[in-house]
Structure formats: structure tokens, C-alpha cells
Image (cartoon, rainbow, N blue to C red; front, side):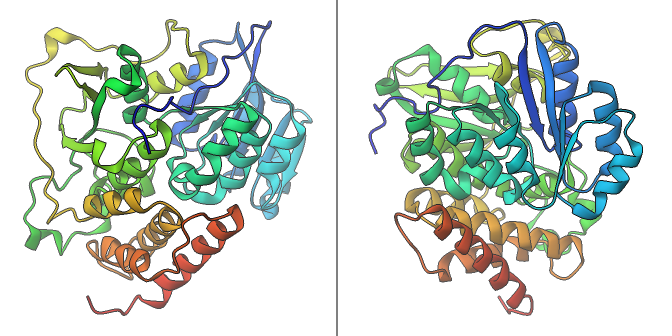
Length: 402
């Protein structure tokens, strides 16, 4: 894969119109709520036409009553009546496992914010890309699991995949400082999570409560636990491979506890271009919506004079073996990403339920990646099958002795 190849994620800039229409998938989650904050500050230019959630019917209804989109989607069909009862107007409501995809197919929009955690929103993202939409991609799992399908599909349809993760947004912005062929490597910054200074022995006894105490970011429980294992960086390594057409050996992780520099690009002349900002998800969300324009927004502002230091440390691959696994999966491609993502999701849930220990999350995930029936050029059906197999394998191996 040539590092000099054109960045494949931006093919179309939204055309000018009276108002831009946005659908937010996962609107009741952390990223979705922040996206609505951003849109609320730009209502002169933006209109919410669709909102989607998994199970939080009351929260979805509250958002809908405020923004009054023409359509809503809820993945749990048994929550549809609760949603209807809480609405003060009559939008079109899609319900059931295909609700998100149906709404994307039937409601016209200019941009889709993909903020559903996990692979539950994958098929809706695929549909948005098929339709040539701008996709503000907060769901890293979509590219991790299906980058080999999504990126070529975006190339064909003219869809724009713009990252919302703060790290990938930073890289996307920094890449504009030079030519693609002049990129030496990129650095994904990591806060280090709550266990950055813990010993390997102490990490064997980590509780769910411990793992949910992130020192910098306010996120949902699954993402917070991924940060604690540093599996989030493993997923981001794979995501960066697909988003920016990079080789695995061009992607590095650096621990930056202050979370002020969101990522960096190193060019061949020795220059480092970094994107700095307060740790506020609304900044990359807004940039994904308004790119290439910039405008004032609701994000917290960074005060340079309040900064005391910016520190950087190499990650410890022995205490955080997920990083090594991320590099292996990025280099291998094929079905490996789908298995990595699904196995981790299943293992995180088992940890939250008290079935396995904290360090078993990565151990079980690696076990599934190593044992799966690898396919180098998978179809979407192959990737979904690999996803199902990985979840079953993790459930089967809960008593596995590592």
C-alpha cells in the first residue's frame, strides 16, 4: 500500500443550500449528545432530520421534542410504544433491528453522524456510504471491522468519510500541511487511561469501578474501558490504516496524559504538525460537519497560558498488549479487524458483568484473532460472519486458562 496514494476519505464537499440536513445515529450517547450541542449552535444553517437510538426511548423522545426531526429510529422494537407516548408531535418512527438502515434509506440528508457504539450501526453506515452521503464517523468500529469494504465503496459512490475521533480528526487536519508522499509517520496520542502508572501485578485486580474512572474524557462505559485497556488505540491503529491509506509501520502511539495535543503527523523533512485543543469532543464533531469551513462553536477553548507542561511517554506493550495486537491486525487486514472488534466488544461486556478479569479482555480478544478462519479479501457477509463467530468464541472461552 503506497503512502503516496491519495487520501481516500474526502471526495465531496457539501453543496451550498439554505440549510444542511443531518441525521444523528446514536443521538442519546455521549458523542450523539455532543453532536446535538454543536447543531444547536448552528441552527441557522443546520436542521436535524433524523435521530436514532438503541434502547433509550425517553431520552430520544426528549431530544426529538426539542429538535423536531421528521424521522426517528429505535433499534428495540419493544421500546417503540414508549417512544410514541413521550412524543409531543408525530414524526415517522422506524423500529426494530433494521430501523437505522431504513431511516438512512428513506430520509434524505446531507450528512450522517455515525455515533452508534460497536458494530450495531455498521449496516446503516454502509447504506449511507452507498448513497454517497457525508459520514461524520465517530463509530470507529465500522472502519475497524469493514474498512476493506467501506473505503472502496466510498470511492465508488463519492461519499465523504470524515473522522470524528479527536485523534483521527487531528491527523486529518495535520495532513493538510504537506503532500501525502512526504508523510513519514503519524502519531496517535493516548491519555494512558486510569492505569498508566499501575504495575502489572496490580492490574490483575482491577475492578469495573476502577476501569470506569477515566482521568480526562467523559465517555460511555464501553469506550472508557477500551481506553483503560488501551484497546481503543489498537482500534485506532486499524482505523488510521484505512482512513489515511497508511502502512501499519507508519502508525505509532504516544502517551500524552494532558490530552491537549490530539495527534501529530511527522513529515520527511523532520517537521511535526500537531493539532491542539481542549479535550472537548464538540470540536472534531463540528469540523466534520462544516469541513472545509471553520466557524465559532460551543466547544471549550484552550488557554495556552494555563498550560504548565506537555509530556510524552512511550506506551508499555507488556502492560498494554492490546497495542501490539492492533499493529498485527492493521498489518494483516482482511477479516482480522472484524474479529478484533467483535471479540473485544464481547469481552468488555463479560468484564462489566463480572465474568472475567480486566486483563482477560485483551487475552480473549487475541485468542479469537489468532484462531479465526482468516480471509484476506472478505465480502460484507464474510465480515458479519466473522463478527458472529468472534462473539461466540469469546463466550465459549470464558473458562479458558491463559
